[in-house]
Amino acid sequence: MNRTALARLLSMSAVAGVAAAGVGSASAAPLDALIAAAKQEGQLTVIALPHDWCNYGQLVAGFQKKYGIKINELNPDAGSGDEIEAIKANKGNKGPQAPDVIDVGLSFGPSAKAAGLLQP
Image (cartoon, rainbow, N blue to C red; front, side, top):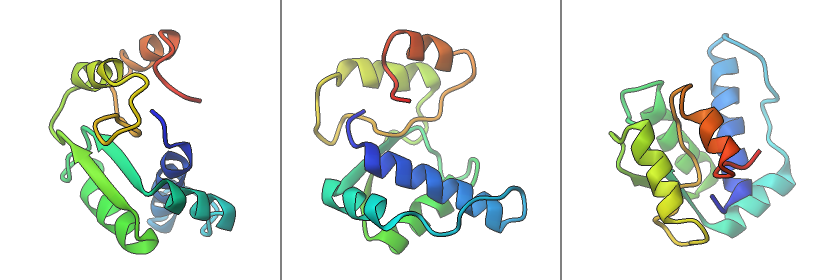
């Protein structure tokens, strides 16, 4: 993963969306510097975020509309193993095939982190 400001902004947007739904609390306004850095990065690549799961469809559409940043969606129906393989296959690649944001199952996260495939 290589575009950290974009990934952080998407994460903040997701948390703010949950807060708006009354499920949690988060700052409603992301930092201007983070938004500017994300816009400079230009595009966010996500993988395995099906539009009918966890409200990802609405999150992706809302993020693009709010920030004017294109989201490149790779294989929305991929499984956790596919996501990890996509990261491995694109290690060092800063192009549009390198996933910035993933959603893996609990058994995949710790091993991917231990292998150095994830950013904090």
